[in-house]
Length: 305
Image 1 (spheres, one colour):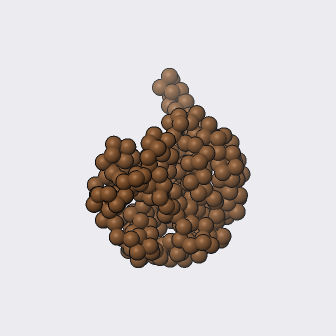
Image 2 (tube, one colour):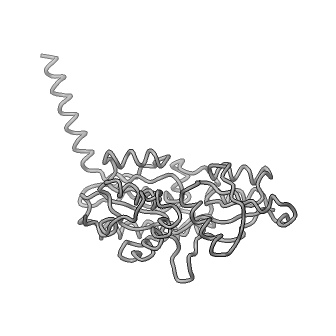
Image 3 (cartoon, one colour):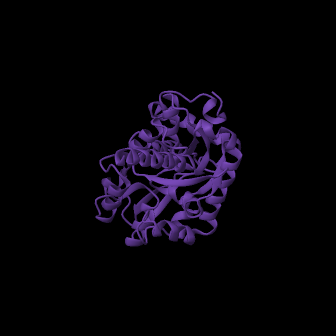
């Protein structure tokens, strides 16, 4: 009798857990600047038709890809090139909008340029990915002839190299940039790599994608994401407090200035279609394999395959 009672209890608990899981919309966000755009959503846990948003931080592109392949996320924020690549591989996630429009900057040590051949070397992280591609594009547009060095693989390694004096000139992303600028006053921003032209909002380097089950909720999702992004921009210190209280960023890593340099501004696919297509064409020109060898079809943006 006890055995049957335990079995019944197990079944009831399983059903209850399943019901709770069905009441949650999972939002997977790759660790980095994109997380800042979701601070308000983390704090408020908004709902759509009784389903609560739960924001989960993902530590690597590989883990994000695994989540999406398994269909474990309802929404996800990840690099645009990764989103396009996965779509071209057959994943059924479509593009909802863009929350981050560029956080890459060229930084150099003051007073050293032109004193040594080493200063003509530009250190770049992420070979074959967005930082590398946008760096090459910028140099081509400006007619500059730096020798690119990829021996420092991550922005963290670039930061350490700059602070140790091993690197004189590099491309770096926020929030790493703000940290090194505070630690070493001889380092400064030479230029932004985030402005394709004077009229563009920036490069559509970050994507928010959604599962087919949310196709009829796009307007609501756009509104919630716009609200969360505007919160980060208009109340940066509150956003920082939320993220630090959840141990997503270490104390002192983020500042209002670093958030400003992340260029957070949610635009839906309807508002940003041309900018998105321009960015994808740029990637196709410089590194086609980064997006799966071709531009994604219209279904990537429209949600209709």
